[in-house]
Amino acid sequence: MNITDKEKIKLSKFLSLVLRHSPETINIQLDDNGWTDVSNLIKQLNANGRKITQSILKEIVATSDKKRFAFDAHCRKIRANQGHSVAVNLELEERTPPEILYHGTVEKYLGLIWQKGLQKQSRHHVHLSSNLETAKAVGKRRGAPVILEVLSGEMAAAGMTFFLSENGVWLTDHVPVEFLWPRSEE
Ligand code: HQG
Image (cartoon, rainbow, N blue to C red):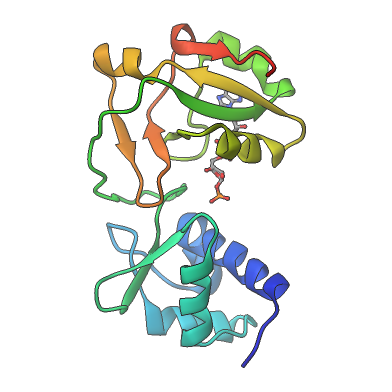
């Protein structure tokens, strides 16, 4: 069975939905660490009108631009690498961040961000990136991107913890205002 790139993106978005936010949509369950059984997932996707085979699922996992999903060692289980709103423990390892990380957002949130710092909203963590391009792409999802610099080295020195997800996203609980700087236009 061949599918187009557009269909692949649609399926990938739907997978993000069920593996991060609402597994009940297709009547599957995630275990404590976010994993779900691959054959049952395929069965339930098809039962809910999403045509997918094991090889298409493998292709989506392998080609996801942000490596959003991971199989376990035997390819029997699958989970999202980050971005969950449901309670899962991804057993992330604490890591020392680089001196500076970036966050991409949009103008309309700045007022609140300068009051409260970066908050995790509905996700488990605030998402940060080590490169500007990624931060720009994240901001762009909502409009003209505005990039903020995060003094992650100083945050770590002050005792705040950081994690690095499987797919290279830096995660932390909260970025207080004093560690945030607007990035001047290049
Ligand atoms: C903003 C995508 C008001 C924050 C991306 C952002 C990323 C505040 C929005 C990943 C705020 C939350 C995460 C405050 C932060 N007041 N707004 N105090 N603090 N915000 O989607 O970082 O494609 O939960 O700036 O690539 O945009 O899903 O987080 O605009 O890696 O794999 O509140 O999602 O990855 O939005 O994106 P989100 P995000 P995937």
